[in-house]
Image (cartoon, rainbow, N blue to C red; front, side):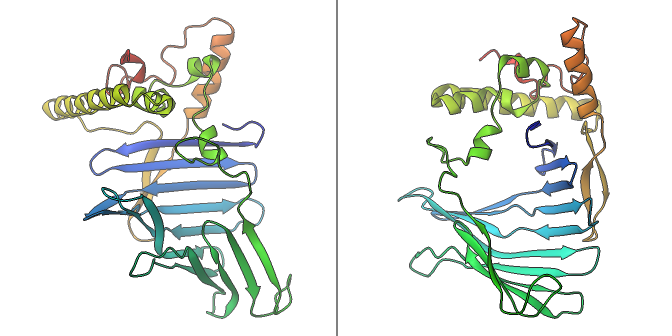
Length: 302
C-alpha cells in the first residue's frame, strides 16, 4: 500500500505447477489486474521468456476498460559474455468499451547482436482508421504523431508521451528502478502487520539483497524442499490447493483470469487496529493453509 500515492497492490501465486501469478491494484481513479503464466526456453547462451501475461486496466471516470498482452523478453549471454536483455514482439491493446485498439512492435536485435530498443506502433479507432502513430525506444521515450484530426489534437501534432527520468534507477547491484526498490521496504512495524507468506519476508530474498549469496542459496534450497513436501502431503490427503484472495472468471480471450475476491485489506486493517490495542491477531492473514508450510516465511529461522 502507498498511502502517499493513494494506491494499493496485492499479488498471489495461485498455482505452482504451472506457475501462475495473479495481481490486483487499485486507487480512486483506476483498477489494474493481471495474470502471468511464464514460459521459458533455453536457447544455448540465451534465455527466452514469454510471460503470457494478460492485463486489464479500468479507468473509473471515463469507464474505459483496456486489455493488453506483452511482448517476449530475451536474456543474452546467460552463460558466456556480458549479460544484456531485450524485449521483442507485439504488444496489443484493446479498449473493450469502444473498440479502439493499439498495436506496438518491439524490434528485435540485429543478426550480429546490435541492440536497437526501437518500438513502433499505430492507434486505430473501432472502424480500423489509423489515428496516431507511435515511435520511440522502450528504455528512453515514446512519441506520438496524430495522423488525423481528433477532438483534442490537430493532424500533424507530435507530442512526447513518456520519457525516462534521469534519476530513474537506484544505485545498487540489481539496477532497480526507485519504484521497484521501494516495494521491498519494510520496518519492524510493517513486519508485525504482514502475513507470514509476504514475499518481503522470504529469507532467500532478504539474504540476496544483503549480498549474502551462500545463505540465500541455502534458504532457496530449503524452501524448494518444503514446497515438494507440501505437495506430497496434499496429494496423499487428496487436498486441492485453494488460493486465499483470488478466484477464476472467464476472460476476453476465451480462457479465464484470476481476479481479486476481497478480504485481504479488510483483514490487514483489522490486524493493524488489533495490534494497537493489544488484541490477539494471530489468526488474521494467517490461515491454516499457510501455517508451517513452505510459504510460512517466519518459520525458517535463517
